[in-house]
Length: 276
Image: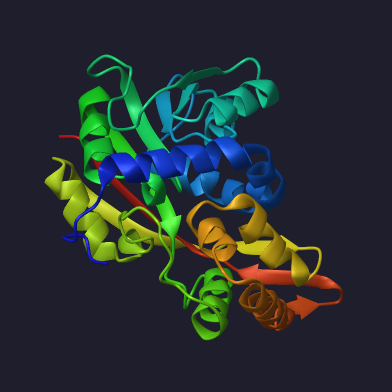
């Protein structure tokens, strides 16, 4: 699927929303130590520090908002999932979290100095609308930044999982049409969408990350229990195919096992730009 292919925005949004309502706590259990690794570089890209008012869009369990608060920022998180907002509030009770839509942010114009989204762009039906909203709520001179996964040949965990499904299962399962999962793994596409939303001087970098897992089997468990799109693809497989996929994922992850610990490279693409 390419960025120009049709997307059923409402169906995709409902699919994503139902997914995150179901897996909020499991996502926190399986992915916290991985996706929180980009919070520091993400906040540095927008200059978060003392007194900066920052909005964390698709905050999930609140990792980036919490990291911003530790830097002295006035941090606010927003997520469309009530389960995620409840989890974020329980973890960080002194911070401000709202339930709201990234494509229609519930905040006034020019009310933030920075807007960030840590792995949220993958889950928006219309990511261009999120960036338009980020532009609206940013003050002049403010900055926006987002992270996404690098391509599966670099983000080895995804390469292992998708390769296993392609070899042993069926990728053609009935999911609502949505944006390509790795669309923004391409730096040029990041630049295009940022400048199209009115931002200037986009900067694209790659952030090294390592997914530390207790055993090779944990990679399958994480994506089967705590993802949304990949979880749906796996759960649509025939039982025999799922068993073969599970085994292939375990074997692929074993290549990254050292001294009883599995460490899988999972770099992220970090894109940022300024509002003129």
